[in-house]
Picture 1 (cartoon, rainbow, N blue to C red):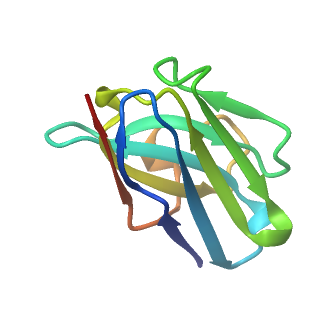
Picture 2 (cartoon, rainbow, N blue to C red; picture 1 turned 180 degrees about the vertical axis):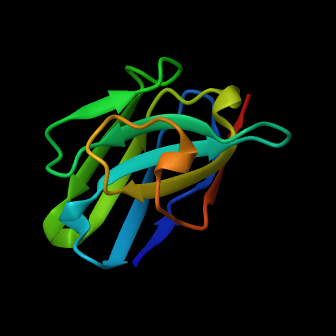
Length: 124
């Protein structure tokens, strides 16, 4: 089991920044690639980005590429989603997730463990 807890969400104006944290406990954090997803009301859960186990490889959805950055520190058992130049359409509940797979998975079904989510609201 891996337990994940997100934090750092809140209300921000368009153009602003937020950093979300995902704190892990349980099994060895470095065994897992970490993904970030988001879900807006009435919409399906959407892939945001992913970082591999070492932190050397990242992959982002086109909608956030160049604005969002995923980082991790295995010693601190933590991953982060740095969000810059936020837009109202980024408003959603953001989730971190862990997968033991080695491919660049973008489907939520490929992730084994999930956090509870944190709300991000971007006002115009």
